[in-house]
Length: 110
Ligand code: FES
Image (tube, rainbow, N blue to C red; front, side, top):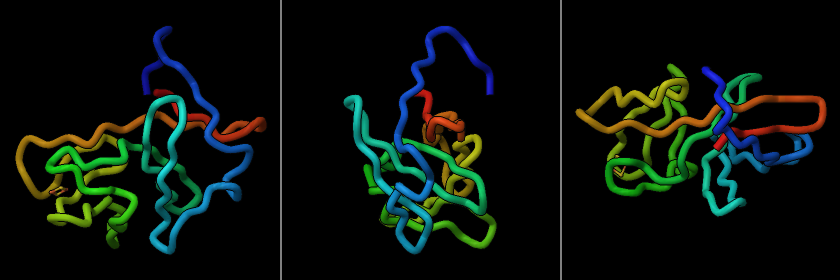
Protein backbone atom coordinates (compact mmCIF):
# COMPACT_ATOMS: atom_id res chain seq x y z
CA UNK A 1 0.00 0.00 0.00
CA UNK A 2 1.22 3.50 -0.69
CA UNK A 3 1.22 5.87 2.22
CA UNK A 4 0.52 9.54 1.94
CA UNK A 5 -0.02 12.45 4.28
CA UNK A 6 -3.78 12.44 3.85
CA UNK A 7 -4.20 9.07 5.49
CA UNK A 8 -5.93 9.02 8.80
CA UNK A 9 -5.26 5.97 10.92
CA UNK A 10 -8.11 4.98 13.18
CA UNK A 11 -7.76 2.48 15.97
CA UNK A 12 -10.57 -0.05 15.68
CA UNK A 13 -9.55 -2.36 18.54
CA UNK A 14 -6.85 -2.90 21.13
CA UNK A 15 -6.37 -6.44 19.97
CA UNK A 16 -7.74 -8.72 17.30
CA UNK A 17 -9.46 -10.79 20.02
CA UNK A 18 -11.63 -7.77 20.76
CA UNK A 19 -13.24 -7.85 17.33
CA UNK A 20 -16.35 -10.00 17.31
CA UNK A 21 -15.89 -11.90 14.10
CA UNK A 22 -18.72 -14.18 13.07
CA UNK A 23 -18.09 -17.75 11.97
CA UNK A 24 -17.23 -16.45 8.49
CA UNK A 25 -14.48 -14.25 9.94
CA UNK A 26 -16.42 -11.05 9.27
CA UNK A 27 -17.40 -8.21 11.57
CA UNK A 28 -19.01 -4.84 11.08
CA UNK A 29 -17.30 -1.89 12.72
CA UNK A 30 -18.53 1.65 12.96
CA UNK A 31 -16.82 4.73 14.27
CA UNK A 32 -15.41 8.04 13.08
CA UNK A 33 -18.49 8.44 10.90
CA UNK A 34 -17.66 5.31 8.91
CA UNK A 35 -18.96 1.80 8.69
CA UNK A 36 -16.52 -0.88 7.74
CA UNK A 37 -16.49 -4.60 7.25
CA UNK A 38 -13.49 -6.16 8.99
CA UNK A 39 -12.25 -9.41 7.55
CA UNK A 40 -10.13 -12.03 9.27
CA UNK A 41 -8.45 -14.26 6.75
CA UNK A 42 -5.98 -16.58 8.43
CA UNK A 43 -3.70 -14.31 10.42
CA UNK A 44 -4.43 -11.34 8.18
CA UNK A 45 -6.91 -8.60 8.87
CA UNK A 46 -8.47 -6.67 6.01
CA UNK A 47 -11.03 -3.89 5.93
CA UNK A 48 -13.52 -2.74 3.32
CA UNK A 49 -16.65 -0.63 3.14
CA UNK A 50 -19.58 -2.18 4.98
CA UNK A 51 -21.83 -1.97 1.92
CA UNK A 52 -21.43 -3.73 -1.37
CA UNK A 53 -20.77 -1.33 -4.27
CA UNK A 54 -23.33 -3.18 -6.38
CA UNK A 55 -26.58 -2.62 -4.47
CA UNK A 56 -25.65 -2.09 -0.86
CA UNK A 57 -25.49 -5.66 0.42
CA UNK A 58 -24.09 -5.93 3.93
CA UNK A 59 -20.65 -7.38 3.35
CA UNK A 60 -20.29 -8.59 6.95
CA UNK A 61 -23.25 -10.90 6.29
CA UNK A 62 -21.50 -12.50 3.36
CA UNK A 63 -18.71 -15.03 3.57
CA UNK A 64 -15.22 -15.85 2.39
CA UNK A 65 -15.09 -18.55 -0.24
CA UNK A 66 -12.42 -21.24 -0.48
CA UNK A 67 -10.16 -18.83 -2.39
CA UNK A 68 -10.49 -16.15 0.28
CA UNK A 69 -12.74 -13.95 -1.82
CA UNK A 70 -15.42 -11.98 -0.06
CA UNK A 71 -18.84 -12.98 -1.35
CA UNK A 72 -21.69 -10.49 -1.04
CA UNK A 73 -24.80 -11.98 0.61
CA UNK A 74 -27.22 -10.32 -1.82
CA UNK A 75 -26.20 -11.34 -5.34
CA UNK A 76 -23.06 -13.29 -4.56
CA UNK A 77 -20.61 -11.04 -6.34
CA UNK A 78 -17.10 -11.97 -5.33
CA UNK A 79 -14.42 -9.48 -4.41
CA UNK A 80 -10.69 -9.75 -3.93
CA UNK A 81 -10.06 -8.61 -0.35
CA UNK A 82 -6.64 -7.16 -1.17
CA UNK A 83 -7.46 -4.94 -4.13
CA UNK A 84 -11.28 -4.90 -4.15
CA UNK A 85 -11.50 -6.22 -7.67
CA UNK A 86 -14.84 -7.76 -8.52
CA UNK A 87 -14.31 -11.23 -9.86
CA UNK A 88 -17.82 -12.02 -11.04
CA UNK A 89 -19.30 -8.86 -12.53
CA UNK A 90 -18.24 -5.78 -14.41
CA UNK A 91 -17.33 -2.41 -13.08
CA UNK A 92 -17.79 -2.73 -9.33
CA UNK A 93 -14.90 -2.23 -6.99
CA UNK A 94 -15.06 -2.78 -3.29
CA UNK A 95 -13.21 -0.05 -1.45
CA UNK A 96 -10.40 -1.59 0.58
CA UNK A 97 -8.72 0.20 3.48
CA UNK A 98 -5.16 -0.51 4.63
CA UNK A 99 -4.90 -2.26 7.99
CA UNK A 100 -1.94 -2.33 10.34
CA UNK A 101 -1.61 -4.61 13.31
CA UNK A 102 0.56 -2.70 15.76
CA UNK A 103 1.52 -3.30 19.36
CA UNK A 104 -0.89 -0.56 20.42
CA UNK A 105 -3.81 -2.01 18.51
CA UNK A 106 -5.44 -2.62 15.17
CA UNK A 107 -5.44 0.44 12.92
CA UNK A 108 -7.30 1.13 9.70
CA UNK A 109 -6.47 3.96 7.37
CA UNK A 110 -9.63 5.66 6.20
S1 FES B 1 -25.48 -6.00 -3.56
FE1 FES B 1 -23.63 -7.10 -3.49
S2 FES B 1 -23.70 -8.32 -5.25
FE2 FES B 1 -25.49 -7.13 -5.38
